[in-house]
Image (tube, rainbow, N blue to C red; front, side):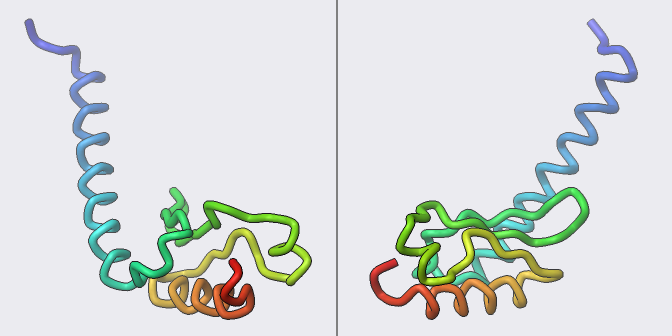
Length: 92
């Protein structure tokens, strides 16, 4: 049984998006150090790179660190994450 064209188009678009995400994951793994695994990193539909902390408490907020950062490219995002990790100190 053949799928209607609309379903085929959706599958093609989903497949393309998954391929893009896989490539993104490989890029981010190369740029974001494994030591920063306390962050969830993703790319928005608008093409911005985002990272949000997996754990964020009152002490983090009081220290003035950010829960979420965003950047135009993975390299800039890695710099922002490193900056926030430095600001948070060893207890974070």
